[in-house]
Image 1 (cartoon, one colour):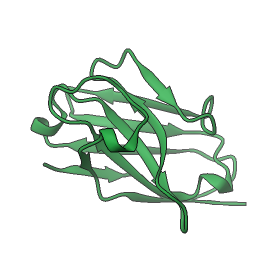
Image 2 (tube, helix red, strand yellow):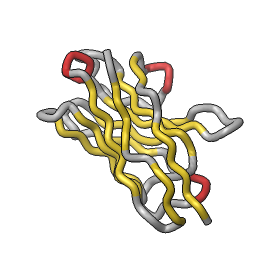
Image 3 (cartoon, rainbow, N blue to C red):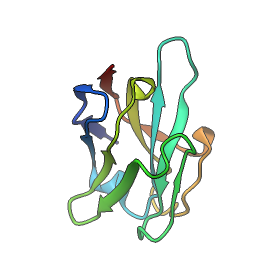
Length: 125
């Protein structure tokens, strides 16, 4: 079971980044996927989630209208397009999978069984 996140980096406020997370096919098959983030000294928080079919997405209020989650099941990959980045978006971003054939998207961290290693996003002011 592997989730490999990439695409983080350093960007100026107002800029954009696109995160990717590749999953082993067995992990991804039928699974809802999510992105969470954790800033230093803070708890890991929900960012966005997408159902297996892609028809349902949820976002944290703080990123609505700026971030977009999507997935390509043929590539076993989930994406997080982040626009209009702010310094407060700086964090380690983690992708997560609920589990094989658990297709419903949820915002609760405890509902996700598999986690990637995280990718650092730093937004300078």
